[in-house]
Image (cartoon, rainbow, N blue to C red; front, side, top):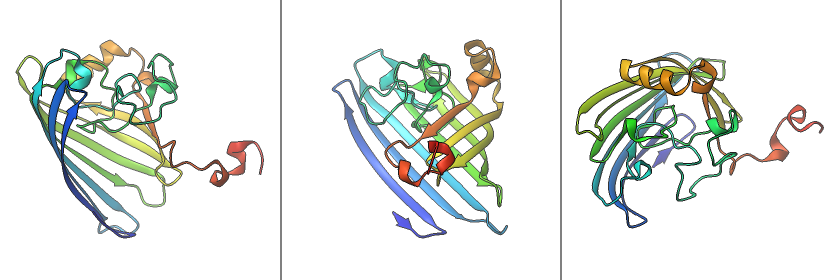
Length: 212
């Protein structure tokens, strides 16, 4: 990883045996750099993954295109405000999944038990804590059909990117149809990411704490 105030570059390959139920090989490339526009950053992520073997039909062990909710985090790698996924607000919390899309991967509908490649691009709006994001990916689904999906929207970034809210604006047809069937109101398609390990209450604004 190479890091500075304006530049971030990271590349890595990971081989995992997931609780004896799946063997996964993944690679990730992350690149951030200033754009020609002043005070603007361009973020790019590329992901590729293969599920080498699996002996379970539980889609939580597959390669997810969307974010990981509390229920999907079977290895307890992250902290969640609601692990059941049933709360209408806290149940919308996600952590970036393999594919990096901003919806919750709560089924095998947009997961792969073979291979997946995705790209995630985000550009901030200068002087505002807002980013424009676009995600796109190609994968073989659980019925062995090769599919291309995409989505995009706006994100609100607070507390040095430790709290981020995603407001989707467009989807590919298949993804739109599935999400509309899952969530009949737009508010249920809004998700958020919060880094509970990094947030220090002593550094939050006083109005957030009810005092100084």
